[in-house]
Structure formats: C-alpha cells, structure tokens
Length: 166
Image 1 (cartoon, rainbow, N blue to C red):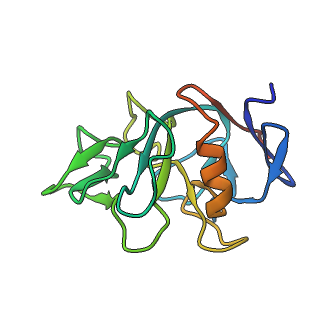
Image 2 (image 1 turned 180 degrees about the horizontal axis):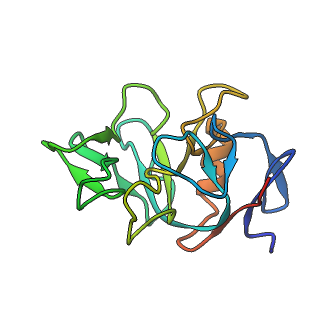
C-alpha cells in the first residue's frame, strides 16, 4: 500500500497522509457481497469514474462527468445493464443519480462488480457524501462533504481503494 491508496482502517480512511472519518455499509464489511445486503465489499477496488452535480458544485476534477436529470444506475440483477449507468426512462429497477438530497452531489465510482457485472453480486458501490457522522450507507463508503471534495481533487482513475477483511 502507498500514501496514494484510500485505505479503510478501524479509525477511518487513510489517504494522502491524512485520516478521514467515514461511514460504511449498515451490513458491515463482507467477503461475499450480495445485492441488497447493505454490506461494503472487502478487497482491492479501484476508482473508475467521477460524477458530479454541476448545478450544486464546481467540477471537482478535469475527468469528472456531470450528472444529468435522466441519469440512473441499474440495480436490477435481471437487467443486461446491471451495475451500469443508464438513462431514463428505464423499466428495470434503478437508482436515481440526481437526488433531491446532497448524497450524490459528488460520486466516485468503484470497479466493484464492474464492468463485467455478475448478477446479484451487488451494485452501486460508490464513494459519496454521508448523511451525518456514523450514519451507515447501503454498502458504499461515505465522507463529510468537504473531505469528499478534498479527496476527489486528489484521486485519479485507477486510485486504489483498499477495504481489508474485518
């Protein structure tokens, strides 16, 4: 591991010589992540994309892609586009990326079960803003807004996310 890796520790996320408080999934950590289990998958993951709300924040990095009103993320295991970004209207189960709350104003996409997704292994394992300190996610990793913005300005495609086994 290097200083450029995002590394989950019992005290928070270590990155670039700093330690940030963060939240993980309500299901804890899992070596066998499944759709809907609320767990954060263990292992070595990579940042593969960055999405942001241009109506709410400035572009956090040159490679960030704006979230539009019709942008969705498929979470339906029976969908051929499972665990991929899709566009409305969409008949399969999905999650809206353009939310009323600020959780997805900035999203770092991980390569968990992507790009060749296996049905049922879990979808939308993102890094995003937390609701409040200590409030668990549905399986993502979440940070305080200013910390997330700081991190987003320093990661790049391929940055490693290390989630050790519990």
